Image (cartoon, rainbow, N blue to C red; front, side, top):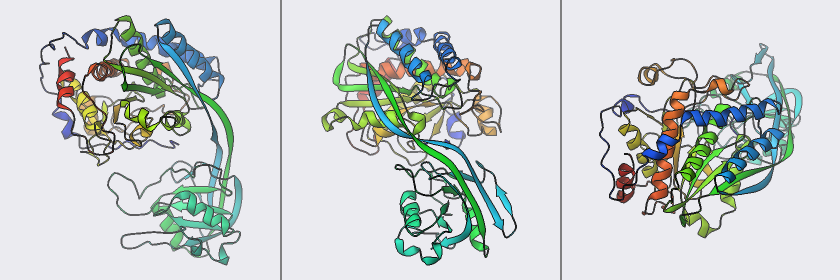
Length: 507
């Protein structure tokens, strides 16, 4: 459940070195090249698809969210295009319970009354219970010193009779948020505030405001999260009385993925090229993620138009329910047998590739920048993208391979993955603006998850650049005769044969 999308970045100096002169190697002996596909996959054609998605949103309540008529119409558009190009197309149906949030409030009644602003001082936790309570605040087994190691709320014994009817103040750490919330509810608490742990964890923010999920079923009582500083401040006060309110519900949703396979290629080395098709309910989602969906759709259409015969089966996947918690892609992987998982060579994921204040981000598959490794082979996916952009004299920056998009279900089951991203609500730095252009101090996509994520929210220049990289990587992994899938988590060193093939496909 993406309350926020935290973009972690390595030092920009590491990216500047990529913008150097580079002569692509000569053609492979077979004469295979990605040039024709890259030329055919144009931003103009992708914008035509995005205009169609905009029109669909306009006619369906200004959004294309999963389970709505807008999503159904989006699916029909994609299916019609793929079928006309000769693809066999399948709908993969699934159902889930969606967390529907309306509003939340957090106030300190006494001492020193204060109203906390939603989104900057606190957040509801996904699948929070509904309720509006005013009660005393009871700290639960907190550790605000030293290493801040915390088992706060992880055991029923952390709570005593004073919790009855009151609000629990719980520190993050050790066990899941759901265990903490359930233990509080069992002790008679009327609400829960979970604040960040207050320690330093590389690649993870344990100090600031954070979003989290309690998972299904919906919790019995309202639960919100806040920063370490806010939690520590509350813990230091005496006789604190708070108001905590969450208005939220759970709604059953039926949705579907769209899967389209090339007619040719080895099924035991399936390359899944994926993007989520759904938007948030707040807007039409033309950058997030019409851009990724339209880019892979156009890649599929032009691959067919060129009569390409890939060595490996390429499966174009349009995921549903991503905005509600990566539902469609997780469902897809959950339906694979152990044998089918091994038959999946790689997942290429494209989520937001036309941001108006963009950076060309490449997922850090080998974990060299952020420590978050993908399964064996993910390092090679990263290298294919890095080599491609280097050949085009285009600098890139790494982004954390942290499972915040549809590749998560794949890497969680040992399937290597990687992809591209041009930024969401994170703020562009001065260094990034120097290298990539645009405005520092402004979000990569100021319209992220908002009504203004329309056709006017797309940077066609970066869209063209990313689409070319998508086409190149799709053909690279589709044409290789070398195995990619490492079948286990770890730091993949890459496959020399595939690296050679990727370079030969450039020109």
